[in-house]
Length: 102
Figure 1 (cartoon, rainbow, N blue to C red):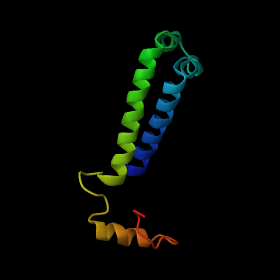
Figure 2: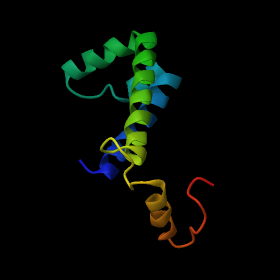
Figure 3: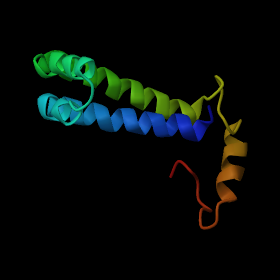
Figure 4: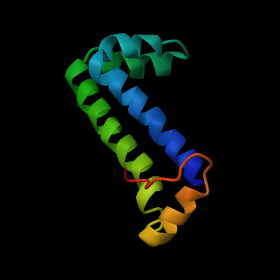
C-alpha cells in the first residue's frame, strides 16, 4: 500500500475515532442499516457507549500512529533521508523556500 493510501486510511480512522468518542450512540446509529447480523453487531455497541468510546479512542490513536508513520519513518528511517536531503526536497516545492520545520 502506498504512503498516501496509508495516510488516507489513517485520516479516516482519526475522523471515525473522533466521532465515536464524541457521540458513540449517535455515530453507531448512522451505521445500523443493513442485514440483521450487522444490525445486531451495531446494537451491541449502541448498548455499550463506554466500550464504544474506548474503542474509538484506540482507533483515534491507531489512526494518528498510521498517518504519522508515513511522514517520518515509512521503512524505519526518514522517508527523505537525512535532514539535508529533506531540506532539498522541501525547497523543490514552489513557494516553499524556508525550512520545513519553521
